[in-house]
Length: 125
Image (cartoon, rainbow, N blue to C red; front, side, top):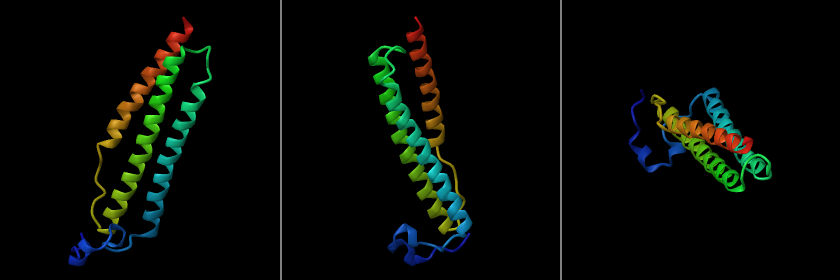
């Protein structure tokens, strides 16, 4: 691990430490873009659910759509936070570490699965 530069505290995070290997930077950026694509897919899904009148009652479709929008926003924010944290850690030559956000999103996606099952069960009756 590199010795911290005392002047680093005065600089913005993207100028602290040293420039990481460009391959690691590009890999980190690709991961961020994957988070962004996932967020956009969730947002598109939220819009696709609303017009499906024969599938479930409107209020249930609206709730599922709102949940998907919330999940899309959480995914986008998580992607940015992960990208920034990892980029900063790479600049300082520190371990990348982990985050509880992935576990929280896993639970949110499991709840999404339960909501989709509720929508399908309600519409088939």
